[in-house]
Amino acid sequence: MKINFIDLKRQYVKYKAEIDLGIAEVLDSTQFIMGAKVDELERVLCNYVGVRYGIGVSSGTDAILLALMAYGIKGGDEVILPPFTFIATAEVISLLGARPVFVDIDEKTYNINPSMIEEKITNHTKGIIPVSLYGQVADMDTINSIAEKHGLFVIEDACQSFGAMYKGKKSCGLPDIGVTSFFPSKPLGCYGDGGMVFTDDEDIAKRIKSLRVHGQEKRYQHKYIGINGRLDTIQAAVLLAKFHYLGEEIKLRETKGTYFTERLKDVVTTPFIEKHNTTVYAQYSIRTGKRDALSKYLNDNGVPTAIHYPVPLHQQEAFSYLGYKEGDFPVSEIVSKEILSLPMSPFILQDEQDYVIEKVRGFFAKG
Image (cartoon, rainbow, N blue to C red; front, side, top):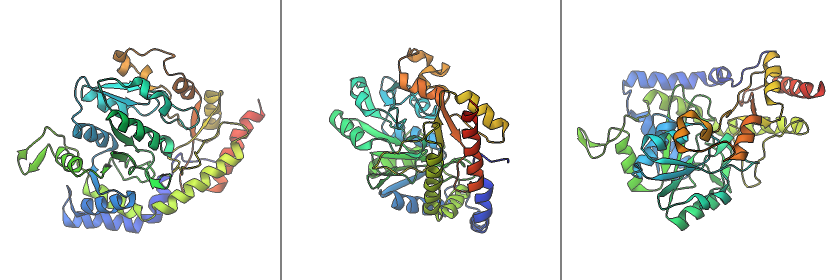
């Protein structure tokens, strides 16, 4: 059996008529930049999240960058985040001349460990970026409380958790700013790059709207140094068509994630979900000390795998200037050596899941 890691083709075929119609409407309007569907998407998604403002941007990376720019982050500032995440979260801090300050992760959830944050706060610390990894929201209440105590901002990197719930509230609507990505493989994905920034702060929203169009407030009148960070209208049309099915897809993700867990939990470490959380399983990631051998075995048997992430950020050459060394973040380091993502999407079939389960269990059975 040959299985797709993420099956975007089945999704497109199911929603083809609505997606094609939405794209055709944009082509017919010729409003390819900042068209009406961008405005509509912003309204729809900020209502879904439960905040006052949603600002469509060009990618999840640019969403984090614009949020930091809105807070005026600059050289000499420090921003706290976990080292076990995609590089974009830390990369944009460095791009602004600020210093990423890493805090190790919780070994169960793989999200930042709130109990270790305060010891990293200095007079230079401006904010915290918790990453809601693999589709499960970080411990936002504790993090928000720490931030309030020390006068810091909080930006939730929800690039993998759009649609997830934390204590009855949706990801992206929990801190000062929530950001997400619409990369094609995300729980809500477009057909290129895209992202959105969410906030209740009117001043922050106005600033980000300006910063995403070169700092422009009126045509050819520029208040800030900004970027070209707009969401394409065609991508907005794709997202609007797919959003109608997001609730159904999240339920399918939960069902399929639970199916994997119940049948694999005795042979590998399966995802741990806090009781007050729901997850959207942006990835279905297991852990085993035999990760590399298991990955090769599965790949040889038609089961694609991925590693999110094989090298923690503090061990990346790009961040060598920060002066971290091996052993500084032991949980992130051990997880990076054991983590393995299995095929997951709302459209994976049960016989495909059964095949994956059979091969995982077969690997361990043969010793």
